[in-house]
Length: 368
Image (cartoon, rainbow, N blue to C red; front, side, top):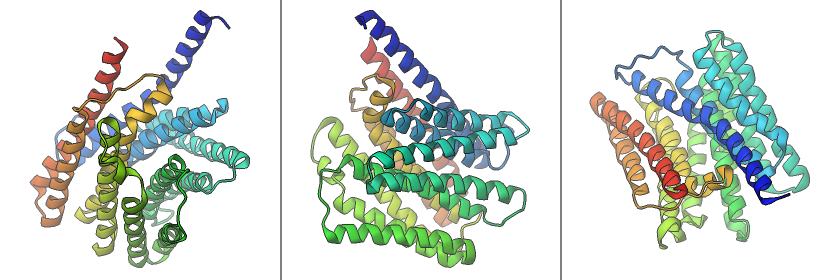
């Protein structure tokens, strides 16, 4: 193939992938706006109660993870997963009849599970199985939440814990995959296995007993968080410079928020609407999950979109703002100060917007 033909083909490929990621980014912005509205900020939005969590988990995280996996595994049919999850989540927001959007998102789940199945059939590795289990948890969370909306089951928050498992297992598996050359000791392997067993058992028990399962789930989160701080190479990367140090510090901060989410789950009476659930869910999804996005974005986005993202020190601005504002929000939750909770939430949203602007400006500046 000639050089011009290769360039045109590559441009079409990156353009196709960019078109797949756009719905995910739109879902992030809409989900963030709905979250601010639920905190009491006046915004001209009319949305169903499930829209915030649905847009963030399935619309943004589901699309992002599915696209990254489709690119890594290199199966053309795999691109159905991010296409279905992104478009399906937006359909549930914009289209009053929700069933088509819900079916599309779950079709994306099935395709992602099939991707992991194809990967595991080629390379029978533990972390590939862990990713597949995470995708199954995404599907289970969707089903439980939807059934709860129609009063078919009271397990809406068990569905939320399934969504937590989707992100946690995916992230832990990817960290194990990235650091596969490190040989774990027997003690560290048993430590990780104990945390995973506690999470899975806590998830099952929560469906039956509520509080007891939540405490076991929280202990699993805390166990995995301590394992990541102790054994993940991010702690060594913190001592380096440039992008390596940035990624190490950002990931380590995320591991600390995972531990905080575990502690909140251990002490809160139950997982229902209120300040306890707000503290737990946002320590996990904002503090932990978005720290993983912030830390990996300069590494993952170039492989997905083909656009180099050089490191700039201003990247620390969205990381510091997210951590500081989340701390304000959790203090407001703990002390019952609604104004702190509101302003913390607003600054959380600002941190996400600054992250998008910093990333986009780095791409544009480099391409120029």
